[in-house]
Structure formats: structure tokens, C-alpha cells
Length: 195
Image (cartoon, rainbow, N blue to C red; front, top):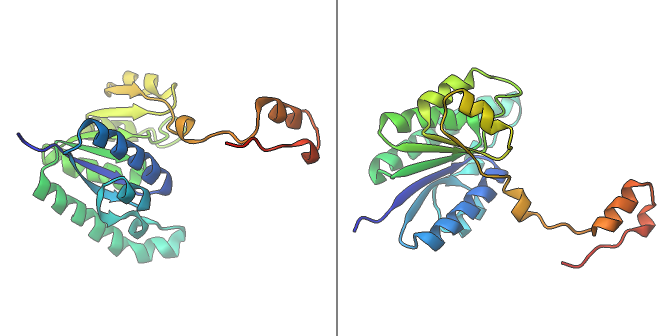
């Protein structure tokens, strides 16, 4: 029996958290699966072989971008080399559109199915990305319900899956305390709910 192999790529902290949750869920369903890609500490703890550390891709500001381009180039090609080596049945690309859309194009050329998780905000800006996405991905997994109609209308296979933070973030205030605070009660009336 062939061992399932999946590639997961996240270039930002939020994507690392979502990728780790995905990896844990996959490990429960497919305990012998091989998981590799790009991520941070959360994905490593979840059992993903991060052949590229997401910190290599973190760039803010023009000077960091210019200085970081060689690192991003090396990371991009390292991921493609690993994809060529492992031939994953599926690549899950999480957010990080400037990098992941380029990667998706190369993965599709290699015959690797691509699922994109956490949609680029095409509804807010850069609507031209819809054409790129249609050509480069096999399925979009949306976290905002209204995005599903946008992708469906563009002819892109899509599924609304909900926002991962709904399950990850636990409230610290009770509903009544939160409502009381919104009504203008002072901070002295706040109490933290143990949890």
C-alpha cells in the first residue's frame, strides 16, 4: 500500500496555526501519511517536516523585501525540489497569496492537485487573481461564507469550511460581562472566566 503524502505550505503565523490543526486532523485519519512543506513551530509540533521554515519568508517593508528576495527564491525552489522528490497526492496552500499563487502554478505543471485554504481577498482588491486561481488550483476552501458565491460564479470549485479561529479561540469573558462592558460599565466590573 502506498503511503499518502501531502504538502502543506504556510508562510505566516496564522497559516502555521491552521496548518498545524490540519496536520493533526490528517494524522488522526491517516496516521501513516507523510506531511512536508513550509511552516513554523506549530506545524513542526504537529508532525510536518518543514523543509522550509516560514520565518525565511517573513518580510516587512521595502528594505526587508529586497534583502529577502534571495531567501524567498531559495525557499520556493527548495519546496519544488521536495515536491519533485516526494510527488505528493495533494498540496494544501494556506493564505500567503504572493508566494503560494506562484507555487500553485508550478505544482499544477507537475500534475500535483492543489487546494487553497484561506482565500485571497479578491472581493476587496486584485480581482484579477480569480483568473490565476481558476488556472492554478483544484479547489478553494473559504473561511468567509460570502466568498463561496464569488468563487462559484468565477467557475472555481469551492467549499465554505468556516473560520478556523471559531474553534481555536476560547472566550475569556462571559456573555453578560461582555455586554455590560459594551454598554459602558467600567473595567472594574470585569471578571475573567476561568477556562
